[in-house]
Length: 208
Image 1 (tube, rainbow, N blue to C red):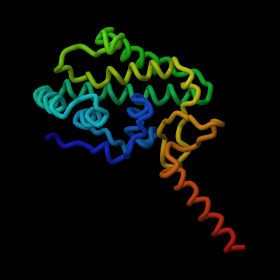
Image 2 (cartoon, one colour; image 1 turned 45 degrees about the vertical axis):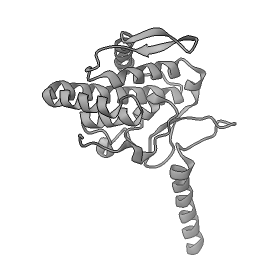
Image 3 (tube, helix red, strand yellow; image 1 turned 90 degrees about the horizontal axis):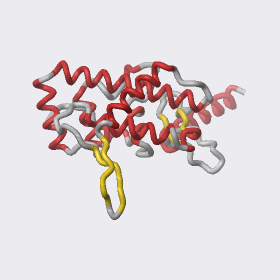
């Protein structure tokens, strides 16, 4: 088994696949705490999101060990896509136009993903299925790009928020009734912010 970060330990939100992908780092303006350090971590994330089975990930890792330069290139491509998606969604929150270079990065990934999609019969109807070389090192990025396209073209795009936590930049969809949700997770970032406010109030009261 390859050595990689355990993504199940960070309790991803599981709201949208593309947002889970952007949330593989807690802080985009400083990647020191990034959970993604190499291709093995990308595989581990794919397994955690059920994009790959454990056996599929092991097979891809064996290929990556034989082709380290190709695996490194795919990893760099993944991080470039992740950061572009983060900036695109963050710009939408502030009603700003995304950077053209970020859109180019995203559209390139989406175009590649769409070459691996086929409409197939499913459960009495039709649905999308992924096809392609089972040994393609980039296959876990295809559904990420498609997920982002669906979210960007939906009404939910206007409710994507950046967590207001001091040490968190996770993206989430604000589904609260009055659209006032501030944190990715109230039990984590929300409680941390409340505890900090309580500390400062208590300190101010004691000093008074």
